[in-house]
Length: 166
Image (cartoon, rainbow, N blue to C red):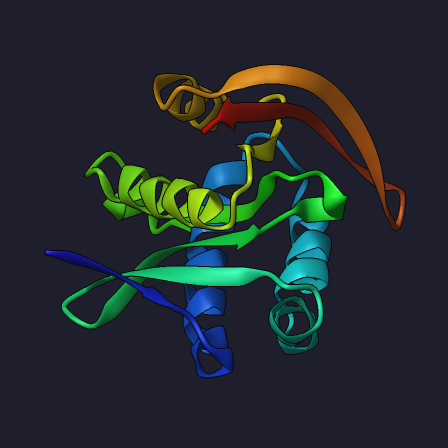
C-alpha cells in the first residue's frame, strides 16, 4: 500500500535519496553527467530544499511504501500569481515506476490545487523525456508552450510546458 504524506524539513534526506536514484536514471540519455550533477546540486542541496520549503512555498508530498519514501512531488499554489499550481518536481525510484504511484501523487497535486482555488496545474518537462511526456498526456495534460531556461554554468533547460485545467 502506498501512503502519501506532507514532507517536512526532516524529510530532506529522503527526498535527496530518491532524487539521487531517479535523476541519473531519468536523464542519463538526455543530459550530460556534468549537467545532471550541476542540477542536482542546484535543486537538491540541503540549502536549496530548505529554501524551497521555507521561503518559496513549495510543498513536498512523499509517496511511502512500508515507511520507505519511494517518490515525491512538489507543488506551489498560485505560482507567480497565475492562479495556477505548478508542479516543480515529481520523481519516483526507477523500480517503482509504472505502478500507479505517480498517478497518486498527481491526484494529490490536483486535489490540493482545487482546494487552493487554482484553475489549473502546470509543469515543465524536458523535450526529450518521452516517458514523462507520455505519462502527462495520459493524465489529461496538454502542451501549452515551450521554454528554454538558462540555469547557469552554461546549461539550459529545454522544456515543454504542460497544463491541465481542473
